[in-house]
Length: 360
Image (cartoon, rainbow, N blue to C red; front, side, top):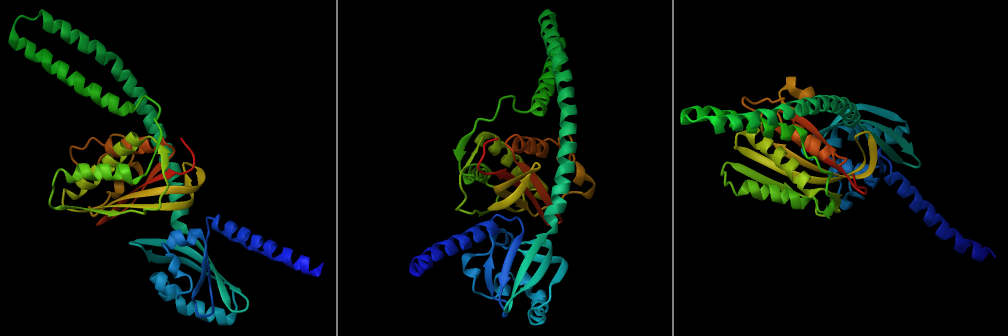
């Protein structure tokens, strides 16, 4: 009986460990475990994503995998010896070309280990900004849609009247005026249709995010602008999406064109794809999401435009229509996603976030 009980204990213990690992991987909080020498013993999925850790990072010194931890190493070493719980506030760590601001709670784990709980502050601030931005965008878009409908109705009457008038005029010089009327009415009609956006529901099909990204970059490469450099930084392990490919192509095309115009055809555009875990998009938390970054080296977003960036008819360039980013945001939001942005002079990133595992 004792023998049989021992046999049954091992699978139960393995299941318990597997359940614990699964639970930790499902957390949005980044968790890391280090030994007395500050070698990394464990990192959950959120920590691996946050610091872009390779599988080989486990068993190696923490600072080798995340060099930004270097200033914290002496404090963590003394903490292991003291056996104290400490909180490190608003740490700014450079990770993969970006700066992450986070709080770190380090707790001792007998006999001589530490558990690090890492809470990115940027994400909480970003969620608050997204909520406010989404509300303003939706309110502004509702007003524009109503205005567009009000404009479109009389435009048809103006066009019809101009055509009847042109048919009655015998003097060719006078017909030039009616042609101007028709041309301007058609231009305004095109603008109204752009504001209204696609009128049909998304036509979803499975595809890999890199296919529309490559399509957009190939279009750019055919223009042969020698001073413009395109860099692909893809995660080849990303699963397929089930969305409307054409809508996504248009959104990416608008973002890439915006990056190109910001740099005036001189500099580097980088397209980066990554997986995100436990990510909040449009107020909903998703276990998995795909992030596609369009990064440029332009002068950055003017501070005065930051809160209005995705509103229609808002542009930071002379002669700009202010529709490119607004349309891109609308196309992505129609599919359950969201576009975020970060900007400083020399580095601006627009990130397309798309949830996995469900159709819009």
